[in-house]
Image (tube, rainbow, N blue to C red; front, side, top):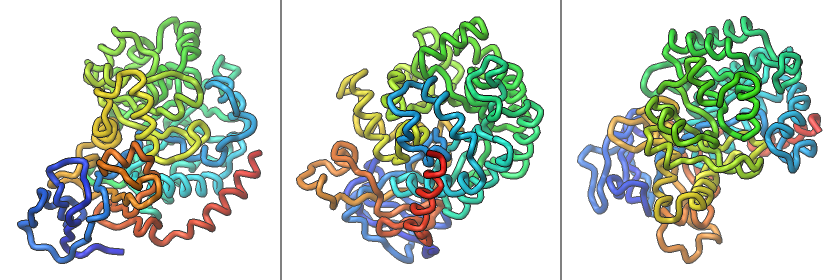
Length: 447
């Protein structure tokens, strides 16, 4: 469904910023004007959308995910385990992935994200068993089909159990294969232009699954092509112990030793840092994707978000994989960030506005983007509209706060690049029931 030439999303019930309390004018896929409360646009408009029942947010930006894990939610072999034993249990299951599984799980994960207010998603796919060499190509095709903006990271694992790593040998690739495919994907799919619908980043999986040589080579390749770098770091104490034993240094020292301490890098989790490491990360401008649900489910710990932010790190939010969350709902993840971070920093410092900023501008900054993550003139027209008409909102006072405090879980309308992608709580041109049925069939094959 195409939008008219200029659309005024008019007089929302509430908005994240008072600068557009009267709505926004969308034209040619971008925000053309912000309208203050009680005002009219100065630009001519061709149509209006009455948003009096909606809370208006910039599209949420998911800074870390593993789409394929929607196939192994609540998997029996992984229940009640912490990270390393959880991974060891699931690696053999994931080694059985085939192309249709990647196709369907990607479509389902993106649909779930879209319905929860997310307009841009980053995915970290690092599993390329034999027959699944084109996994990123498959993911990009599904993102294009749904019209969701994506940052797909070409993950990798090269350090199998025979080399002292955690993954089984059937799930690792040679470094030459990894680097050649990384370059192919960048050249074919990465767009550095403002408003890009697809970008590619390089993402060796973790210190316990790749070699130092691959980390260095990935950094050099990213520098050559001007793309971002991503990895898991400082998620658990087990990881710290692994780095000390394997490399003779803590995770942040290891990161610096392989040329990754710079502002092209964003990290998933970032929990177990000391004060000196936080200072170094902030000085380098390294981004952190906070994944609260996963961190709680795997008992990993709490990310020191405000300390990292104060040091200079962009802080965003990621839902993480749907086998350690176990869902892909972005607005619920923002609520989890609010609740978990209040345990660390208190209610006065962790406000609903703060965590919504992390999920929008913060996550966009992690991805190296300044054209998304906020509704401002000239920015991309990515936005979410939530109704407060479900039972949990009855009697709610502040509409913006109610989104998180009362547990919003589904957007009513979603726009990406100026085009409606969700209308009346349903994704345009998608048979969601057929998708769910096929997902169940494929997931059953992995039990």
